[in-house]
Amino acid sequence: MIEIKILSEPLLVDACSKKVQDPAAGGINIFVGTVRNQTKGKAVLRLEFEAYESMAISEMNKIANTMQEKWDCFHICIHHRVGVLNIQDIAVVIAVSCAHRKASFEACQYAIDTLKQTVPIWKKEIFEDGEEWVSAHP
Image (cartoon, rainbow, N blue to C red; front, side):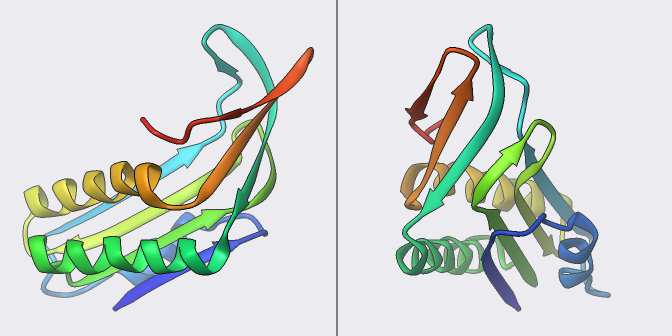
């Protein structure tokens, strides 16, 4: 099972976790990306995410398909938020289940790293003295 969503409402970690449950899974890995209150020593007030949704969904599906092929994942759930996010809001949840823990860790890391490099979702940081579109790359 693969579930890919881009949502404007708050992301639910528990819902993503439940989507990847499997009796054969020896490892379930969940990455939760949150909005932090600073970047490079500068206070962040909030973030704004925009996406080219159809292309983003397509690219996220490619990531999930690669995860299944390379790590033999049972289930994959990738949810990304768009819109205005405040400090500590959840921007992305990636959940994956595999037969073994090492595969689940590797697949999850691959997912977030590749998502930041290839998926057309853009982030604007809002500061007290201005705003800036930033590269999503790690």
